[in-house]
Amino acid sequence: MAPPSTVTVALTGASGLPYGLRLIECLLSANVRVWVLYSQAAQVVARQEMGLSLPSRPAEVEAWLSERHDVQPGQLRVFGREEWFAPVASGSNPADAMVVCPCSMGTLAAIACGMSDNLIERAADVTLKEQRKLVLVPRETPLSAIHLENMLKLARLGVVILPPVPGFYTHPQTVGDMVDFVVARILDQIGVDHALLPRWGEAATGGARDDA
Image (cartoon, rainbow, N blue to C red; front, top):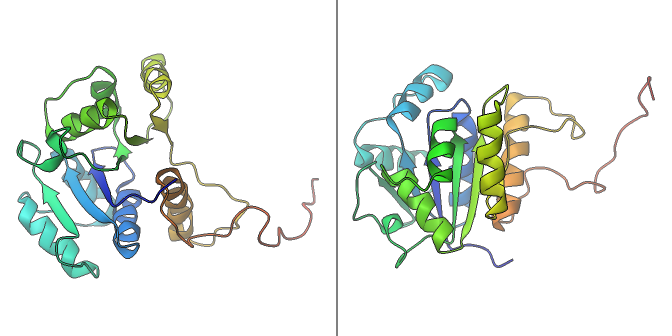
């Protein structure tokens, strides 16, 4: 898989905003151009989960992310939910891949139904119709039959459904380690190199379990 030059990252109102912000950081570090979209609900989640006050103005979020990370000129753009002249709104200029992380069940349902009521939904619709890679990171539990049917519908269309489920065989020591596990799997899906964690079989697995 050729590495993407441009990735759209959408942040919605599901729990799990640390995954999305860490993903943006890793993409920028990998010299990928990143287009960021975020919902109003994501602002609420940012405050609740991370104590962050994401501004309502996309330009202010872009400036904040640029100050936080080593961003090259033109590498990062942040767009508003109704900024219909954004590149992601048209199939004539789609990103190479799109990741919705975290993905709320409402956003997932809208994508499954082909809705385009805001820029996140439109960008996902464009990604689907242009047959680009679309990864959804749904964070909900338990899942209803409606949730599962929507995920199955999208999976049959080639969408990657990647729940943020960390593995423990890497022996995570911190919450950050668990976040990196999920972000590493996302990066693998879109073809971006990383060194967030060792590959299976490349590191010692430790001693045998007592209950083995």
